Amino acid sequence: MRKIKSILLLTPFLLLFNQQEAHAYPDFIGYSYSSCITCHYNGLGGGALNDYGRALFATEITARDVYDKHTEEETIAAQSGFLGSQKLPWWFRPGLKYRGLWYKVNPGSSQTIEKYINMQEDVNLSFFADKKQNVALITTISNADAYPPHTNVKQWDWYAKEYYLRWKVNNNLWLYAGQMDKAYGIRNVDHTAVNRSPITLGQFDQSLGAIAHFTYPTWDIAVNGFFGNSYDDEDIKQKGASVVGEYQLFENFKIGGSALHSENKSVQWDLAAFTSRIGVSKGTAVLAEFGLKKRKDKLTNADATLGTYAWIESLILIRRGYNILTAIETSKADINKASAENLKYSFGAMMFPLPRTELRFMAVNGKTFEDGSGQFDAWTLQSQIHVSY
Image 1 (cartoon, one colour):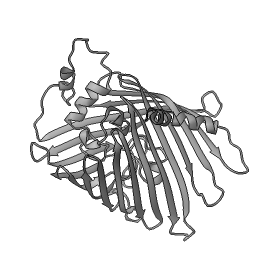
Image 2 (tube, helix red, strand yellow; image 1 turned 120 degrees about the horizontal axis):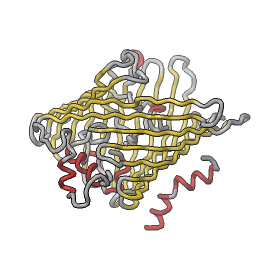
Image 3 (cartoon, helix red, strand yellow; image 1 turned 180 degrees about the vertical axis):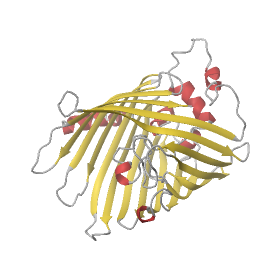
Image 4 (cartoon, helix red, strand yellow; image 1 turned 30 degrees about the vertical axis):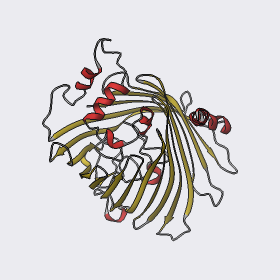
């Protein structure tokens, strides 16, 4: 078993050499937290952290270098609230999130581009009808800064990115209704990855709908019907349904599958994916998603294109708060005929040096393979800062 885990951990590096080219997160299964409902108000992951998630992030994920060695973990956990150790009313939990990205494309060349963008500016407001938080209203208000996400949202507008009611029927059934992320695949934080925005699951692709989430110790499944984003014009709203599920083969090893169908007046999407999340050792994990993507242009009535995508990520713990992050991504638009194939490899550091703070430093290499043409590799240097309260 140890040999199998070692091979899986090295998969991103093996793929790199074979090709000869160069978010709380689902990776934290490496800490034995395999269920998103443990730390998030949304049982499928993403969005604001609950009180337990905040405390866990402060006491297990974040470095404690700024604390005296005699400071107890209980003290650090008590300071992880929105106002530190100051208690808030049981019926209300606020939160603030900011994520900024600096990047430089093809450094050292005459074609270089350098830019800083505000990727995420969120205000989370969560309200509860009872002390056990069985019934809740979860909202996220965002600023459309660098890239207005939808036709009816102008740059610099504040708008309600997500808002939904959550009802814990019992320990095994959670119901959600409102505008939220669609239920599909692994919700990694990189919204530009091949399993996010390129297949209509990006940072601003929330949709009105309802989710029934059945969760048990060794398996869970969620069924989602959706009707389009409330800020989209009617003719571009993607309406449809999806299903996602995971099964625990053994401790810290989950496999899953997803399927999605959606369409508007001009485009129809059909997606299917196999997923895997493996906690190799404390703080170290390997995640993978392999999928098919079928896209049909309804306006031209041309034959649908069937493409593929694959995403593999590894997080390797160096010491508390400091990690090596790698990712391999591939995508092909049409497997039935000659078409471009894209490969991207990312390598760098993901660090949590201070409470409420995340830093990333990454080098990204992109390559396009296409019959009859050759293209130079594209290199990008990136750094991110993420502050959360």
